[in-house]
Length: 244
Ligand code: MG
Ligand code: MG
Image (cartoon, rainbow, N blue to C red; front, side):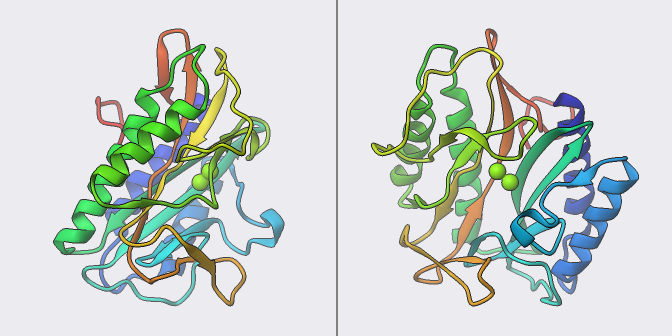
């Protein structure tokens, strides 16, 4: 899974370079699919429950599951890019929300806080702790900064399947199983943080999830292994200490 994740991280580094005003979300998807296939991997989202593209690309008030198309990015937009790939039957899944040109202060704060939420959720991982410590850490930080956490979509186990047990909520959840984390578990942690209400709705395309109040939303995701030495971020960008 580390090998899959490293390729995925390299795709993101290329995408960051190309995001700019005037680029369409379809342009981004095309580069993603080309890079994935050139690396001998398969884009795991393409055809998943009929999804038509290799990446989910979600702009501004779009939370997740946006379909790439002819929408041109504008200066000041934020664009969430979520990519999964399969190498030798093992999945990796990651997302980041990228600023387009110069973004405003609220968007800037939302991106920073969402990234911090993911980092705090990861830092809460410890063998023997329950999965719920992750969501509690994420929710606490989002709320402390005046933002809300999307509850209708959650993180997940990952391995030979894109989505495996357990579900990994980004909030304190009383309705999902809350297993103890064991060594060797690999999970995709993916906070979706909204500037306004936590409520979301599905667009007419039946894929794109939007904030109900059309305020901004951000999404960051890493594939993380639970080890005896602590969490290991498999989709870490580059070799430095920063997760992104
Ligand atoms: Mg993802
Ligand atoms: Mg995921």
